[in-house]
Amino acid sequence: MISLPIADAVLTNARGGGADFAELYVERWRRRALRTIDGKVEEATSAISQGGGLRLFFGTDVVYGYTNDLTEASLRELAETLLRHRGDDRARVDATGRGGLDLRRTRAIGIHAPDVPFDTRSKAWRVERLRELDAGARVAPEVRQVEGHLLEWEQDVVVANSDGTWIDDRRVRTRLAATAIASDGAETQTGFYGAGLSMGLELLDRRSPDEVGRTAGERAMTNLRAKPAPAGTMPVVIGNGFGGVIFHEALGHLVETTFVAPKASVLSDKLGQRIASSVVTYVDDGTTPHGWGSSEFDDEGAPTERTVLIQEGVLKSYMVDRRGALQTGYRPTGSGRRQDYTFAPTSRMRNTFITPGTTPRDDLFDGIELGLYAKALGGGQVRPGSGEYNFSVVEGYVIRHGRIEESVRGAMLVGKGPDTIMHVDAVSDDLSTEPGMCGSKSGSIPTEVGQPHLRVSRIVVGGEA
Image (cartoon, rainbow, N blue to C red; front, side, top):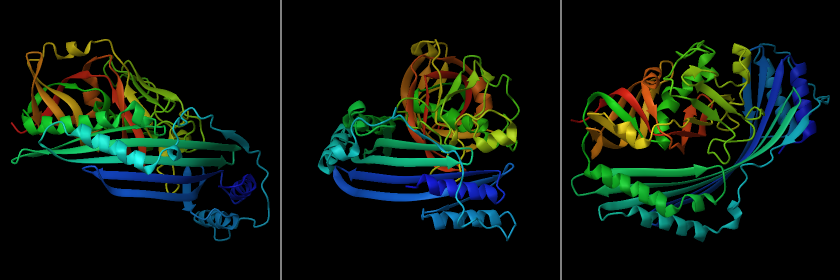
């Protein structure tokens, strides 16, 4: 995509133009999408994009620009434009000078490499897998429509900077998702389920299309038969897997230096303090083999790592990118991420989860006279500064006298992340994780959320009853 001499020259001359630090990010994307409705192909697309971004630091001030023209002339022009943005109209990158950086090339070793590359399977094979998904979703006659999605991503990344870093990383991701619509003539409800990992088409062996479709169909039927949810403040047991989205949104963003550095988080300056229940240990791990949010290097060229954010209730670390480290003095954690070359990186989550506890799952319900089992969560809204949230429960059940009873719909969980995590009083041992897309200042990126089943002693539940 770009040669070492060109990168060397652009970075060296950007430094010569007054920047304290210069970074070049180059990528090539290939994305494929196949979508079926009721087993018939509705969309089949394939797209390739390529480009690069140049980031210049002047102390903690940053300017960023990008281009899809990766010629040396274009990149030099971009550097000149960014230098002039600092207010010096005389700034000009030397058009003939070559760099003298000691760029040390490092290639990813491929711990997330696919076993079944995309080019080893035909389009017809893919369509048959989506038809299996469709058949699996039809768990009852009331399931009237099924939509299946197969998404495939290949991304090649080069990051070079004026400190001498040069990394090559290849990221491959596959996602399979189903949406089922069920109707009894009077009511219509939907169910969704998706699987995704950093791997090739072997995902469809690990998470069979039939299983993915069946989960979506069962959720649609559960909601179709559900009664209105109760409302009030009550104990809530939150399901494993995607249940972790509530803490991803209402807590995770509060410990990114994107919000910590400007004091826009209620958890700024809280290192070493108790911010959660003692049964909570919260981790962000970019090294999870084949994790949906994993990569060997972040989008700043730093190796990813397993970062313990909260240990037994005590805040141990933030998620720190390069700029965040300069602003705060905290150690970088390999957390700089971006959607693509059109975004500058910021500190972001990777695979974030609450670690397993010791309480058997069934014991979480003991002693609850009236509560809610939020088995699966959906979308919601969050105020990043305070952690205030509301999340919809897409599959929920009433808890009475310690037993799971009828299904309910229309429930919302309302609260503040820092308060909610203080009221987690028991965590089970059945950790699971699920994929999602997270939007923030550096765009939409793949992140994995997760947790075991856990119990919150009290949450405000908004309902219909």
